[in-house]
Length: 573
Ligand code: 6R9
Image 1 (cartoon, rainbow, N blue to C red):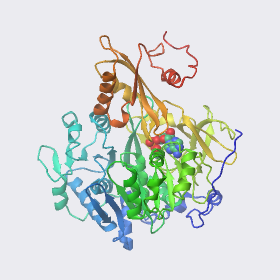
Image 2: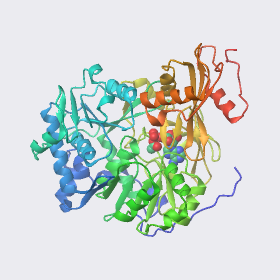
Image 3: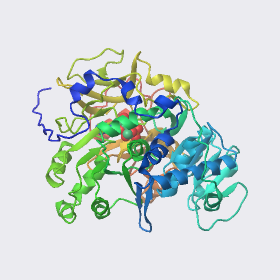
Image 4: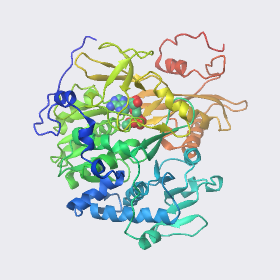
């Protein structure tokens, strides 16, 4: 690939990672393991290392969480985090919840979300965070698949939990000031007020389950990706060398804990590194976001391309109304980061935006840009020390530089997923090329070892950094009384990366209309979730299908982009 790459030189002289090449050449994960108390005690628990250990080391009064939304503004110390998570552990124990049980957390960001999550981890439960925008079908699928025994939620979200159909779900723990008793319902505030502050933490094995994140593939229902306590090694280490966290940092990750970035890098990495962690509830607004940086003097900021593009759209004048001089390190994840955005960031924030690549399945960052390394705008960077990435063909042969192929990671690494809940064959698919994890992304590596994202190999849609499986949307669409068949694709969009577009053929007796489009979109929004609802709908008399009846999304995409449809030999007619 013959092209001019521009380079943004590294200027950081005091980064935790001094030299990328040097760190890689002599890397040993055991050195990282020595940072943990279990290296000597043999007693493992992620929440202990993230919270309790710092309290024991004298950091009890340090702020762990700066939480704010439209109605609350609180600072929670490490000492208070310990107490509250200990109490919540006791609340769960009293209900009979035990190690290995799945406890779901389905609520908007709030300090209680963090107490519940860490408290669940402390008793060895496997936590399942659910994004607050999920509607009934999405909630049902996940609770059913995981056989969750308890869920922490709020009265507003309660109607979306089909409790009557979920016999294994014994406890619904409600965070509210207006508790109304009913069978199976637990009053969070009342129980917390009574709970003991002394918790016998559950010491687990490094390979015991920690968290379950559901994510989408191109076929089938969402898959439950299981991570284990051992992931802390990578969370801690990348927090150190990628987020570059230091003692006095005020760190802000804008992701919701319903997604993996909001847990791995919104909870585990910052707390393991004893940072002060900013959590902003509520919706995106440029003023609000800049104000958050200004008020808390945020030093390290981890966000996503869609957000940066929206901030760019809000204009340079908006930036200039705030004092953002506290920022010293900015990072991005979730979608391709446009070189234009990187250049803009340099201009208005006087900061390099460091792209990072990883996935729900990888549990932690893998291909990154580091403060001490030159950035090539548009590149995701280089694999973290201790790991290897390569571009491989479909047989697992490593391709030379500048050849596009499957982005693959040499197995294993500390935060690699350990299973797909209830679905061993899905898990194995990822590792079908011996010695490699196959990401489903296509990319190439340049001759200097920088990786460049090219696209998805499958039909998975990435809208505003959120992964959406077309099958899940199609399944919901065909439940609408007017819809006979539906095919869903990601359509390129300058702001959101991709938007969801649905091609629909109607049942007899229904006529295409704008009202019907709106009604169908609303149906998905109410039934599944807002971010999975198609922003564009196009009616077709017929959809292209294979002879075995599978809708050919690749043809829909080609139609959409005005591209040749390619090989149609398997098409129905
Ligand atoms: C952490 C997270 C994973 C998918 C991944 C890829 C896309 C993530 C990216 C990126 C280009 C980056 N992706 N980071 N694409 N550049 N820096 O996002 O997890 O929600 O599972 O999504 O997102 O396609 O395969 P997840």
